Length: 366
Image (cartoon, rainbow, N blue to C red; front, side):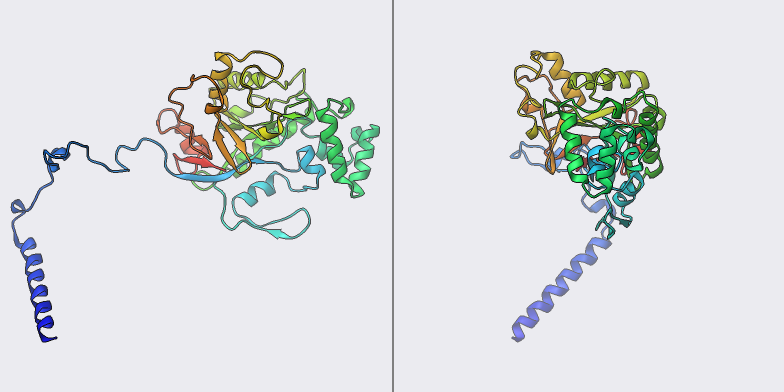
């Protein structure tokens, strides 16, 4: 026992002298870092210095949010009973407590980093007018019937009728709100203004967006469209619908709309396809589009540029491997659950860093 104590004391004294010696030696006598990092390796090691963080050139800050949210503006959401609008949606997402449609309060355990209020563009503005019992709605027999039944508590069945009639192309013409109508344009401006109001650089990002709701014979081809821009650019266009003649159910026409917007404004759009499991396979064709048009290099290149991901239940995955061509070399969007990789090139993303992104550069998740 006594021997162990003596040994411990000796070890302590030697260690203390070693530490003091390091401090008393002249600087020149201490080991310097080599000018060439490779000098630290012997001739027996032919590899390179390794550090997981060295020379990293991609965003590595995960941001969490929701890219597929509907307010009471959307026909289906409103008819199913949602009575919360754009204000409540953004307030809830940023961490505020809100009162739900049925009365109880609700609050997230932690705020989201971003939100896209992606309301359906088809007949955008109809449901608020339907719920309010506007004269033009009540003048139509179907509109009057829906109004009475919704107020009578039968909103779920009305919602199913609305969805079914729209998917079959049987929606009443008198109740159709097209992009050239004042009601449609007014709601689109409300969406833009709400995103501008709640966008808080450095704290919370409110993206301007909408949902393009193509249904081909009842098969889902829906896409959420996100703007990387503010009101000055988004206000130069009206959101696209899937109903001709001012809209189209063809995804190629959506991509053309996106390219036209970018050429006109210098802005940037991203489309995210979702629920391809409800498309009977036509969301991801391998040989020809749903209308029989053969797939070609233009189709693949345009789709890879406009919508490099697809949103499934709870996650987003790259679609590049679903296509039979290798036409997208270097496409930096292949991480599971990644929705949008923001470039680190300062010149190309100054606007995003100062306005649309909470942390500058990062991966967006939903």
